[in-house]
Image (cartoon, rainbow, N blue to C red; front, side, top):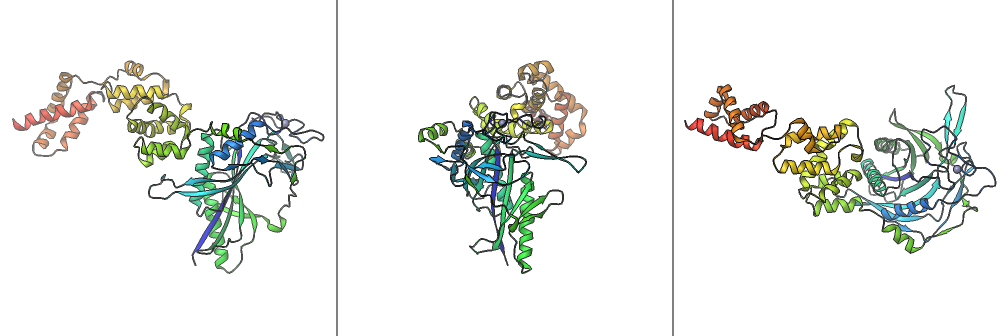
Length: 486
Ligand SMILES: [Zn+2]
């Protein structure tokens, strides 16, 4: 029998606000001494009152708009009750029945891989909540500690519809979501640091069946690749269970990254009953249309729109357009260059070629963390266009910009990289090379065209790559023709 997987994702995103969701404590807890970024509110002392951080509400609305959601006219907070040591109050302030955003979508397969069709993955809801602290286990294996620095850091939970059918679609959804969140600058989205976390609901059903199968929740995936592998493992496991004639158990499973398997964490009967009820210490919030419109006006050009513009207006290939649009800082760099230089393909080639390669070598993720600036690239492109340097020498210039941050003209002067276009100088070199390589000359005369490439290589070597390759080619062909007809 053929099976189909049905997958929904729940993503928790830490908002990169300066302060926590209900108190003025700093959210920059990473690397701090435990329990130094806490106060009576986020450590759950009795008799204190939470105050909503307005920036959290603003960023939640911004995220909802960027993900095509409708924004609630009125929203409220609820208490989600459970006991765990990292939860100081014994409940988490979250949102239950009146979330801030609902009914959005993310488009995947939007031409990013050629030949594929667009697909909308629905977003059921987005709600605001507070993060919990962290349990830290002692090296002796007997003691545990609690660090509340993270308690009260604002989170958005973004819940997708069960519209995803494959693990690669899940990965595309996550990548697109992360890209959008980075564009609108609401979160660092760093999965390794835990500022983006993902749980997956997975079920399988016979192909053609419309009823949903029993779902299993998978937790503890620490990378997009981990999500993909955990889902693949789980789909295969569930199909095996179905084919053996057994039933899938509704449960929560943990992904074991080292073994690449999912393992039972708790069964349905052990699931928590959270007994949600409205948070009495926070009022409901009414959101005015003019405030929503004001936030909408701050949205930047988003990746789908950018992709279309690069494709339609700038005539980039779908592949190049998707690489640029998928990387907010690279796209910003490109846009700044494109504002001052019309050969968009040349900018793209340098950005996605030598510059990206250099960034990989140096382990730089964000181009604005490198020493190269759009002005550098623009100056270098102009120097190539006016014949001062060749494309080959430009590669050396790129290396030097990354190393020193100096301007291309200065680097060229300092390293003596100006391209040689002087005919008489080049002719002298050609004559030398011709004299030194009689075998290649006789090969050429007997009809072996490949000898030309070798001779050009020798000439470039003698000039340490500085001869203008176009002039070298033209002059060499002329000289060879003379020899042939002699
Ligand atoms: Zn606090």
